[in-house]
Image (cartoon, rainbow, N blue to C red; front, side):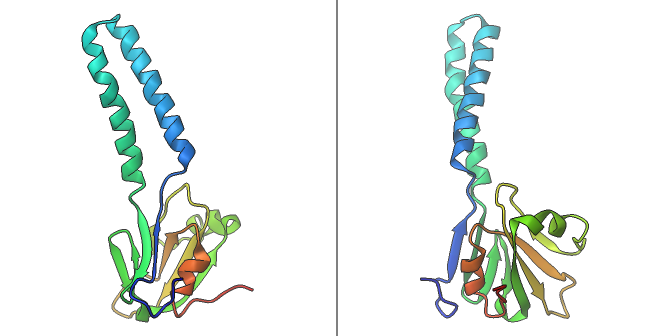
Length: 157
């Protein structure tokens, strides 16, 4: 599968849940219905219906473009990347501890790559004197797979 020594490493797309697409379609249909009521059945309004659905799909698609991965000796979170050799330790943050990690315990200088629909995080502590960032918090659905690709990772068994 994914091993620390390979160039492929690990990749995860942080897509929105499937039921968000159903909800967005329902909201788009409701907006189309409101347009229909406001336009009183004018023929031009039917041209707006595909635009409304495409706009809803574009919003969800853009939210689903977020990704996390390890490749070529670097941890990637979106467009940000971090060399693995500056990581002193890394550990999973379970769903129960997520609110504490993102709340009162959060250091303002930390790098946070958070997606609200993802329940778990990975905390990556840095050991880089040139970087003022103390740690990264990165959303992931599979923290154990991501940590398997980080040599400094610790497991809580």
